[in-house]
Image (cartoon, rainbow, N blue to C red):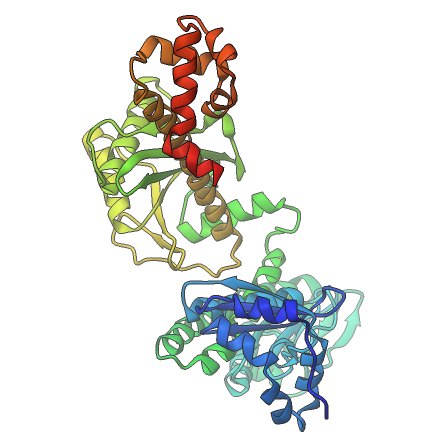
Length: 500
């Protein structure tokens, strides 16, 4: 059997891969994603698909060999840890459903509970497939025995029907549920109207929904524990159940309140409100970020989102004035204090949520600013980037939301915008400082003539490109001074670097 051929460009792309954790997406010649995988080392894992020895090992595995033959390109997504790669892999598999990831996308092994909401008397039925969009589904549940016991308990507790029952219609809207001893065993009236029975179904559904959420919390804890022990295969299996259960719970919320009519940003706000335990939807959110380079050019940004969207007219930039040096905590305390002291003075309303880019130290510094202002802070959290962990200023434990959670995604967009805005300001300051420092070195050039040059040409680059005659046209310059300045700029170190 001939070895699988791949282009030299593709092999060169493999050699340039980083030696760190991440997720890789294999594509066919049409650019379609055909496989998603995770790796502790992207370089080693992806390279293994293009090694000639692998062809010999896969002669008896036609499915894998076909996958390798179809690979025409790939993409990678780098992450900080293998557990993070594990979660991202599952998310992308659920999103793209690649044809060669059947082991991950096939949920037949897990049981669901189906309730047909359009039936006259909805029953709670076990199934392994989602057959329609009209029904409400609970699960998936990995332990079928426990689930069947739960349903049997629910039949007694709420008087609901399971799959083994066929009720008898007595009149237009009156039904006899059982024709045997189960009517006496349940302890509920055996003859009911459709409205009465639906009341029972609503109570039972709320109970099973709660059971699902308890199950989800347990699964998350076990998944994280397995990942911490580097039992990644088991963690991956648990992750698939978690993702499927999260998806099911998100869909079934419309049974009691219709979230499908909300815009994506409204949905994110609602879910963030629930996740953070807020009394109201966070209409206004402000996020702070500190940016510097080894303690120099220290600046900060504050961005505001209104109803989940950027409110750029309310963005603010800060230069650090209270100290010189590299201290993120002091810088955070200073800018938070300045921001809300001003709002107090102007009698303006605080935001609903303050987000701090950083961990517990940055959050404590921001809280200290409110203590110094002698005013209670609004709801405040930190977002620690390493694991996207939400940090609270009180005794609550750190919170890790699923990577695809709309509320977390909103916080990430807010944090990333603050980071971008701070970095842009930092770059502007550096650029201005570099220009100033070069002109500071020009012999005999004072502040007035330096300002005239920058005002006339607009940038150092345009000044460098100017002729001696053009420089001489600037107020305060004659032909002799203009010639000397042109020679100086041409011989400066930065000019030499540009020529290279």
